[in-house]
Amino acid sequence: MKIKDTKNKQTLRELIDTKDFVAHVSVDCTIFGFHNNILKVLLLKYHDLDLWSLPGGFVFTDEDLREAAARVLYERTHLKDLFLKQFHTFGRIDRTENNVHQILLENKGITVPKDHWIFQRFITVGYCSLIDFSIANTFPDAFNESCEWFEVNNLPKMAFDHDRIIETGLEYLRMNINTEVAASNLLPEKFTMKDLQCLYETILGEKFRRNNFQRKILSLNILDRLEKLYDGSANKAPYLYTFKKRFSTDSPNPISGKENK
Image 1: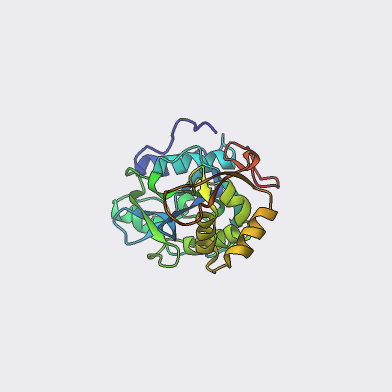
Image 2: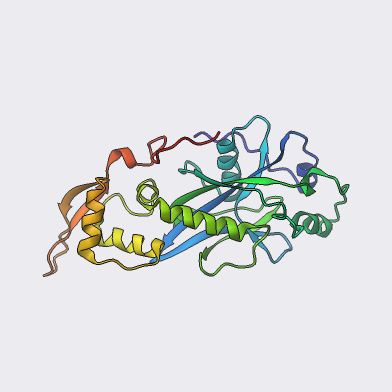
């Protein structure tokens, strides 16, 4: 998807004066990465606050939801052309009660009416993706000053209900691990069965017997077997595998099921 011209590069004052947002709707992106057999999530730190958040933002009136998710993700992290999957809608009435925006504006000396749209109730649509954790970086914007990876089991203090969004995103990932992993860039184009097993064990938090894992994965018919990996050692050379083309990230929808726009 081509990213539209970025729109959120204005100052915080200019942002809150914007009139063309869809009322009460936002998007948040849960981006998981895999490194040294550890599953991590990408978080942004708020200016002047000891709080972290997911990359997210508001939806403009001329955008589809997925376009908004791709745009705010690019603006906050410089990540683009990712496979983003809509996984849940979050609408608890108290989900924004920790007044992050109010505190942020007060710290900047900006005064707005109590009924301003930024203080009103927001329902957020969650999108998730799996990426190579080394490709993400960021630059400051109106809300955030830094970008870091955190272990999913060791999160910092989170803004809003973003800890719940991460937990729900992880549940979704575990329930759809076969197609999500196939649609990701977590592994090189060619990999061994051992590489794939390590990734599954990290995401699911459990160990598998090698033969049982291989039999189950091959029964899914999502892999093509390639040549053997000869490294000069005396050990038996393992086969290399790659994901079948229909599960590649070039596919418009590697996961079955329709997605709201």
